[in-house]
Image (cartoon, rainbow, N blue to C red; front, side, top):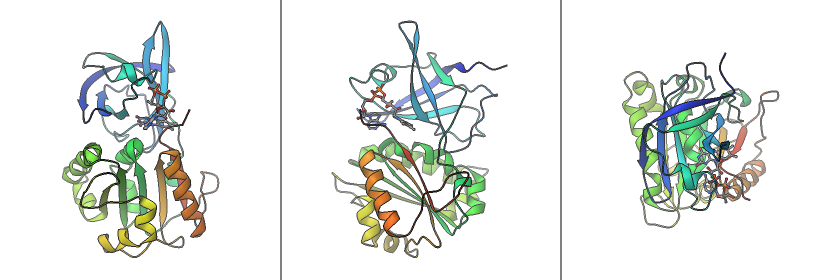
Length: 258
Ligand SMILES: Cc1cc2nc3c(=O)[nH]c(=O)nc-3n(C[C@H](O)[C@H](O)[C@H](O)COP(=O)(O)OP(=O)(O)OC[C@H]3O[C@@H](n4cnc5c(N)ncnc54)[C@H](O)[C@@H]3O)c2cc1C
């Protein structure tokens, strides 16, 4: 039987900016999860496990696990985790959980994935899920960051998914990717709520405006982004869904303010 916390081996690490990095590890074949879920991962510190919630960015059919992480300079875990190298050990809880589950949404036309910062992590596994392309006409992945460099990991995952040998043909026509910045000039700028309220998002993508009747939404980002998006969605008639009562949107925190 598999242990509650498994020790995996770090396979690769890539630093994207001074504040962001991604890494892959081995995966216990017994570790099963739904795309969009998170688990507790971490390091052994002073003989004890130091764990934090992390979304898997790898899909549930991939051999390796992958994660996308912030570096909080005085953060108990990430002040250490940012120094990991290939060959190091990573603790991975074998009990994944989370609310960004397709079954918590009623069927619809387009699925909007709204994220800020590391909040794109769960959507990296969802956009690799063949089932989601069967359920929805389009996936609209919106990733908001302060700077252009913060978008790089998400951009790479989108490009690799579009080029994927097995699912690329499905992904290319159905996945719409909309990166946007708030503190630097870029092809798209502005907050997600502004882009929706002004209709710019839909005009740029040449898709019909979002509606509670037809469309579904998943949210993952900072506490402020979530509060603003929830207010906007509820005002437009969207209701929050759960596995026992599926509805029009679901929400997960990308991190908790302490
Ligand atoms: C459901 C869930 C899923 C998560 N998934 C991820 C993930 O995939 N990738 C990831 O990097 N983090 C994720 N987090 C946050 C993660 O659990 C830790 O908070 C983070 O790794 C920092 O740990 P720490 O011990 O260094 O600092 P902590 O003491 O945990 O955090 C210190 C402070 O840093 C800030 N902070 C923490 N995490 C972030 C972040 N991701 N972005 C911006 N500011 C942050 C907050 O202000 C927080 O109060 C998730 C959190 C939750 C609740």
